Length: 431
Image (cartoon, rainbow, N blue to C red):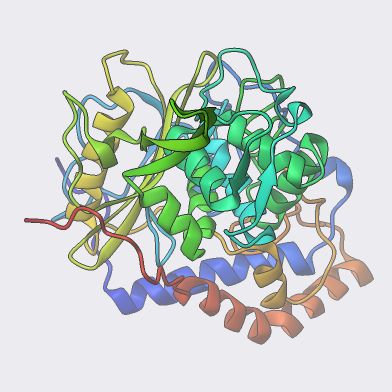
């Protein structure tokens, strides 16, 4: 394929990206604009086609419909036969988005939303905490839900319940943990607050387990952002990379009349981790989470390591309806990402949490959070520039000039930051 962009030396790329990030932060923190000029808030109803205008959190190109990739000399072509409505390939440590397709298209997430549930609730209890299940804990589990086999009047450890969430995508385990947290409503509220903190602004949770619900949406970009946050937690890494485990069974009387409680094996439904008849285990895979519902179709976010490089790939709703298609397309994108890493110029970035972004940017007015025109560099979307002259124009100019040094430093931090993934469990080393 012909080269569409010239190759750029690393130092030049860093300077250019730093300048772009700083410029975005300058706009969001130094300029004021009437509310009418701000981009409209996106709806929580998934659309039949990608909108012409989507969020630009992480970079302007990520807000465009269609495939975004910088093809240049030495960069491999993207894999053929990609049918997913949305996908993204990103460096898990640097946050660089290597390529994307409809990255901010708001779609039903299915059980990949459990990553947000886990990232929100995992810090709440030690894994040894136990809970006796009440009938009310399971009252709101949706019909046809995936279950791990939680039973009323039995006691489970938090460790058991999280294994049920990650390995079997157990909605019963999710609802028990939600009950321990004060109920589904409180849990969903905390999940949405955490999504906003992560700048996952395409995401709106309605049910903690990802069960189909009106208005429940996320995006490939957001699911990747959420996975990256979760992978900073040791327990999250452990649970999402576990292939099989023992889960407590039901207490019954044995032949001697003694009450005993056995266990049964559960296996991870992530087919790149556990394998299937038509999908081999992906070498270097280390999680994260899959999902499948009527509205969402198949969804998946995975993390894999090869030669010291750690990539995240999210694939949402392949149109091709072959068995395990979501895993097959994910594997192709992983292969491409590992071949392209270090050669392809990124098309965007995974932004830091809001609190980190605010700490690196000077305070100033901007458009309200959650709007489609969000910038990837700061915690608030970019507002349109005020075009008036006189004192207002001078004030803006002075504000821009006064903030340049501070914001350039902040921009450099965002470009050069690396989120470590310590103790990443690499269950399947390369032969």
